[in-house]
Length: 303
Image (cartoon, rainbow, N blue to C red; front, side, top):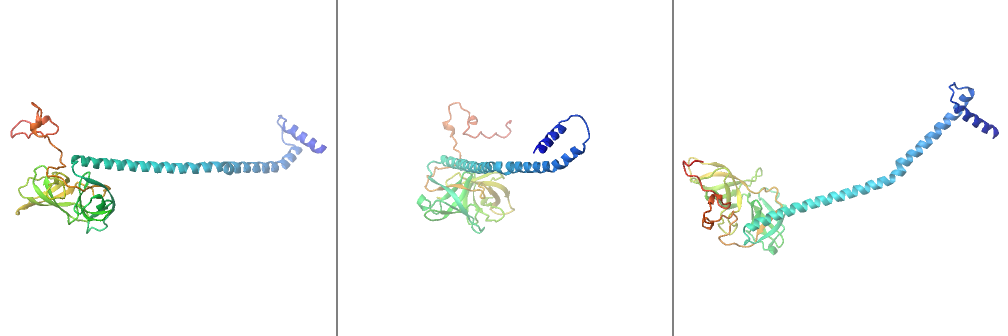
């Protein structure tokens, strides 16, 4: 024991000596003996530290990360749900705005739940039926315009034949000129379009003209937008001219609809209401009224 203590004291004294010198025999012997022990002790200490920091200390961090991931997923779900609610409220608000044009027409709000997989019959299924006042032939509308008419009804559901179905035919006006025609669905699997039929050869129709429902019959109220003229072709002979039109409704993106469940009187219209000139204030200029279209310029008049 005394020898060991003396050897330790000697090693400490030698190691603390600041004077530059080379290792002597004793120094080399001490290094030879102590170096492997120091290496082993260092490896053990480093390994234990790595184990602690890499596993034991990270157990709580891993649990915290898992909890944060769950909270983040829950927040993303809430944001998604609220965004869907916002969009649904926006669609409902626009549909309510459609009803405000003709409040005397009773309608039922409907959601699309299915669509026909075959091009032979272009249809949708909605979640309202006979219990909601829906009947066969009832008009179905979107905020952009005419969707179609009810073709079949059960107690809780209804099948809607779309405007673009080949069996669909609707009486229309050219809004600008009030010329009458009919539109029929093309039923094409390539493009969901409508074809204008029985358009008089003498009718003044141009690409860009808007087609609206005429109100004839008991299906569609007057003034609902049907589509827009895309091209007009006048043949050399015949009583009618040919025209193609683009539907007002995008049938690939329908979600919320309105089904007309009640009747309407002959004065009902969904067109923008225009004040008659007799109702203008004395001295008022009709061209300055926001409800009256400005008069057309006479030939030769300055612009």
